[in-house]
Amino acid sequence: MTDASGIEVLRIEHRAILRMLDVTRELAHLLEAGAEVPPDMLDAVAEFMRVFGDEHLRKEEEYLFPSLGKRGASLDGMAIESLQRDHDRSRLLLEKMAAAAVGYREHRPKSDRNWGRFASEYAAVLRRHIDKEEEVFYPAAEQLLSTEQQRALGDSLRRRTEEALPQGRSQHFSAMADTMAADLLVPTL
Ligand SMILES: [Fe+2]
Ligand SMILES: [Fe+2]
Image (spheres, rainbow, N blue to C red):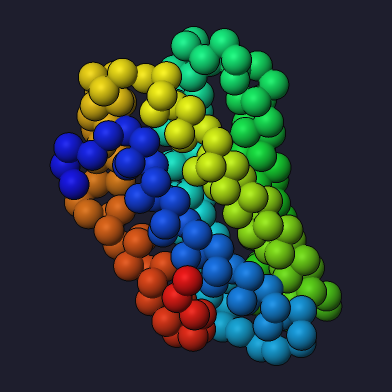
């Protein structure tokens, strides 16, 4: 997969993120129903999303959005802004989840329901966002960028991943999403 185009690199990351969103939603259901879950699982979701998930958002913000903004007069402006707003909203919700996770570990009242509420919204926002990217924006990017530009984007994204997540940590996070999904018996889509 070393010569995957930039968009393909981002699609591959979406798969791992969607898997972790399945996990997030399942944990949210459990907590909202009053079940107990290991606090480590809530921390693991936060770690995955803050490191692997945020690295994906940053790649789009630093490389993909600017390249579309420059070349795609018909889809820049409002459209890119709406994607950025989704990113900002998801980061805010992730911070609220992290705060609720601290409370849950300390057995503070309502922290389980709060984590569940924030996490359900987080999963919904990010899943809708990824659908929008996969159905509209990534195909548009593939039309607007030449093969050469897409290859160059792929090289930039891979370099960026190696700098931010060295020594196979990217694979570590993908495996982590799969393991947690299997632990929670989240069905494969
Ligand atoms: Fe995005
Ligand atoms: Fe994305």
